[in-house]
Amino acid sequence: MLDLWGDENRVVRLFGHLCPRLYDLSALAFWLIETEAHSEVFLAKVRHITQVIIDVSLSGGQPALTVHKASGRSAAIGVPQPLDLETGRASQEADPAKIRNIDVLTRRGEELRRSYRVDSIVGGSAAIRRLLGVAATAARSRSSVLITGETGTGKELIANVVHYNSDRAAGPLVKVNCGALPESLLETELFGHVKGAFTGAVRDYEGRFRAADGGTLFLDEVSDMSPRLQVKLLRALQERRFEPVGSTRTVTVDVRIVAATGRDLRSEIRAGRFRHDLYYRLNVIPIHLPPLRERPEDIPLLVGHFLEKYNREAARNVTRIPRKVMDALLAYSWPGNVRELENCIERAVVMSPDDTVSFELLPGEIRENHPDVFAVAVADTGEPQEDLRQAVIRFLSSRQKLSGVRDAILETVEEALLRHLIDGGRYSQRELADLLAMSRVTLRKKLDRYGLS
Image 1 (tube, rainbow, N blue to C red):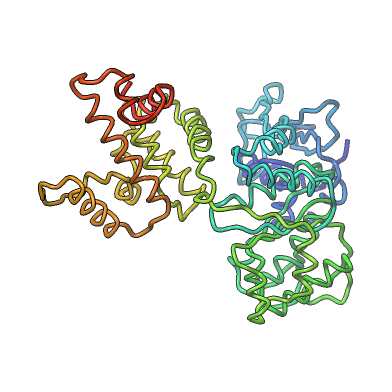
Image 2 (cartoon, rainbow, N blue to C red):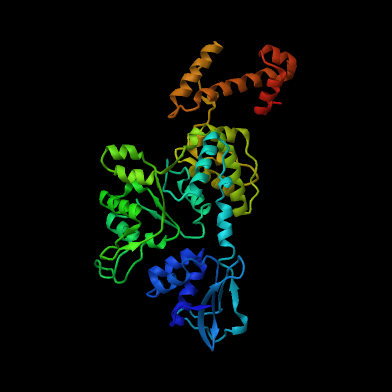
């Protein structure tokens, strides 16, 4: 059992504020780095303890903080209630015998590993199967990983998969969005600074590299990093050492780098905006995420996954997807990729008045893209072939994107033809199959597909 601080009142006050926000030990440690003068003591004692019990209790009438290893796989935090957060002391009504446990860290590590198993990624397309094979290989390695793909394709998810399936899973996974901070702030965020390094640097700041020591540092949008910072990052990758801002003391770290970008880094290199030597350091194991429009066969699987997720979160039972809705989802090009699809399904689950995702619940841009050729008004020329030709021309002229439009037109014409021929029961299935020059098995499949059986 380790007593960490002498000033127990302040620590109890900090834990009182922090408990609702706790997720794992690395998050706790990083939060204390930013707020506590004694954070170095904390990190030195618990950096490699992933399963711990943190007890805040009353000792001799005074609050006390202790940390020790958990005997099993679970871990917990105990806080005396009620607590005066201003003074850090238990209020008069507090009964030391009635200390209430708050399970914050219970099995958190196991939950993360289950959530980010390689086989937990949704998708059955050949592209996704190849991607998961590379991700599994990357997890077994300690080399740098470069994840590329359009926005919304799931680059951060793959970074999680690589980390939590690696031998560094017990260490921290620290994430930095390189495009969200200006150069001066990004440098100190990554490499830290010493007190007095610049105006406002009132204390030492460890930085994300040291926070990720023993684990993984995820650099999102790494292509947004300035050329000067690229040089410093390159040295940190090559030598595993760097100097914090304002310091001449060299810091050594053991960090695995996973980087991500939505840009073509080869084009950035040709334009002089990205260093080729840094690119080769990052791109040891490349993982490319294909856009959703290139793997439409994954859309039904993703829809089912998001329905299950948001039904569970919202305590709903929205499970029915009409054929028209699925056709619209399959025909849409998804510029926002999986993130846009997830938003669409979440909205439908929340807004649906019953158990059905109706066509009207889809966003306008998806409804407008629905491949309904005969919804386009045309003049009746009296010539069926000419009417159809004009309908197709008007349909095409109304589209902003033409991906998948050939299949959409053929399917719509086929559905309309079948619907017309079976109307009134004029033909048996055998007669209809002969008329359309297809087998009865094929005919039955098409009738089932269009809901006409």
